[in-house]
Length: 380
Image (cartoon, rainbow, N blue to C red; front, side, top):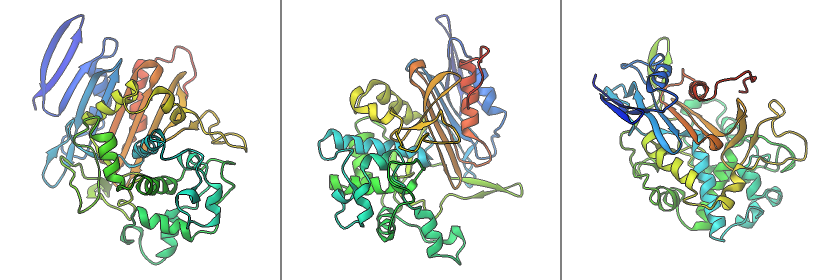
């Protein structure tokens, strides 16, 4: 297989062809070091992953490994579109922040301000609570299981954003007083997608396309909605069972948009990374709430990891003493991670269409190349 790979050494360029993508070596970390992390766990004949590493605003490594579709034997490259799963939440949060920018919404608005028919418990839930997972909402996934108690999960009919709103309107209260604790909630981001639709007057997927993807020229990024649009260069999700790869691409929650329906490629995520670094869509001040850890009244946000916080669509912590904003995504057939180290100008993205690898661990192995321990205890 030909390889297209450009290595930069003291102003001297060496160009080699790479079929699966484009990669560049940083001055202090070589492309071969990064490549060895991923080539050692992937195969040309199996589902795989796409990798992006950026340093100082420059792409230093970009490559695909394995197959995007075993039916057609198409290889993964830098343009292959993966379902981001929960990494999509950063785009949902940005849509809300853009509506705040427009003056159409405020973070302290109550859920009942947007949906007057919502049950009384919504009077205590703010947009901020939904964004930082402090609303205490009941799980819509658990409600689905209760609705279909005799049906295997994969055979439950798919639910959409409006259906999640309806489930939440059937509930009588929250798990805990909003703002008192932190608990990760897909349902909160589904409600946020409904807020975007209601406040903007546009379908959620159209708002993201018009206000985020098109301005940034993320031409192949979209919120996938079956029957309405098509994912080009699409990776299909796979799960290995008894040493056989099964296509496991859709689940009952695959039609929900706000919590995980964005499809994109590592090549388009270069533009997203540039926009975050350069404050293209929102000013630095407007973006600050997204990287401010949630405050709760009952101690640490996550009692299992008191160093960890959550902003708007981002986990916030440090790794080896370096401040980090990150998110993972997990859905049937896909695992993803986006890790950004703003003070170090380092971004690492790993998108996988298989569930037997851990993209976060792989991304941290890349980070380890840039952040030697130097005697410091490793923080995970």
